[in-house]
Image (tube, rainbow, N blue to C red; front, side, top):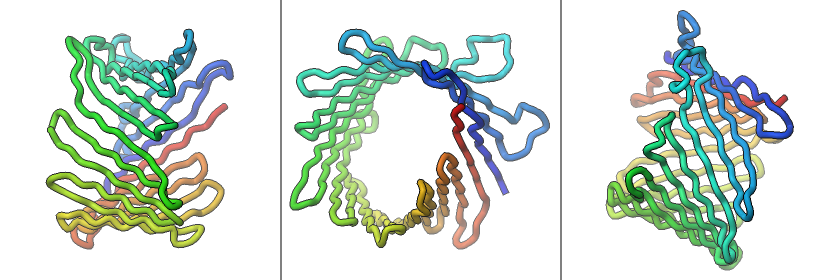
Length: 263
């Protein structure tokens, strides 16, 4: 049985700034020394200049080393503003200390038009768009409807996600030229929600969410011949269990547990 345990230990900091978060990962559940630990420290802050809101942060390895350049895992920054009813934001993330190339995300949102636009790209010697999508929301006869066309520039794949929700029932259709899937979600009662998904290739999965009250819930997803996934949320704790399937046999168990504590 393989056991992967990820435990978010604690969060520390001052009230004047966002608190840094320390996460420690334990791989496979056993190790000879602290080499099995993979601690990382993340920190973020924000400021304002004119009409532009700035957010920035860093995630770094929290382990003894004489090579300081090896500590940063990623460094990111985000700028947001409003122009003529549009909320605009641009976020750039650098991997480690390599500032020659950045992953970029650009978002534009108009609440009045109920329209969102999202773009992903990379910026280095030039600017290369990898993904672009838009989401249009509308209401009709008490139902919430959304249309979400998506285009992957790298793979030239295009699909569209159609969502319809009314009176505790929602339908989500994802369609492309090569594949389609339908998810029907039904709130059976105040505590239980069932959501089966059927794909055009014959694959099927069933999700069951049980509300335990007070921000507690258990969500179980069964994908025949693939896996059983269980997510248990208990207030600030979240436990995820993955059990791969070979027919009806469970071939292993992967577990992750995390919690964030603010002081």
